[in-house]
Length: 273
Image 1 (tube, helix red, strand yellow):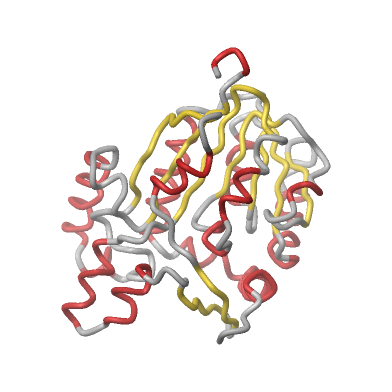
Image 2 (image 1 turned 120 degrees about the vertical axis):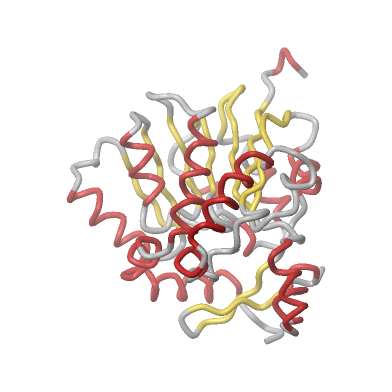
């Protein structure tokens, strides 16, 4: 697995999964809860009438949500299959005036057809496929309006639930995020590399031209989505964990040690530098 091409393999994997992608979430209470938290975070900062550049948009679950909130979304993804599913939604829901689509990797943002976005958004660890994430973040400035924000949902190196798997002897999963060289992920028969980043590293990558607006943990106490049977097996406990997670998600270390973290950074106008 030493010569993996992360984007080609990841793109192929998600294209193969695209037809069933929405159905997977429809039957996963953990994923549904997580996306609800992400949307709530975004709506604290996004406003109707604004423009959003979405990276790794998938089948457009987020794009159609934001469009429903009165925003315009330029949705991008490298996966042809995912974009095909999104285009079906746009046609079905008559959203052509709200959502535009472009096949583009977030490592090639110079190809983005539009400029001066109010917001940049990337969900559910899509950017964890890129080792040199700092270079991607550097490219945001040319696309954002002064005062605009970037909201990234990223997987950090420390996930308490995964570390607990060591107690069951599952050391491979328990410690995979701690590998500085990255870990091999597999989906739909394809293998690709994933890398895990601490919030402090991502904030540093943005640099002094940005300020931190909000840092929120997602899934410190709630189990990861691949433990999809947990809510059915332990409904009472799952309800309590959701409540506690929402209470502590902005508090250290719960806003850093989680399945994902949600980070919103603001590009300072020249007068604030």
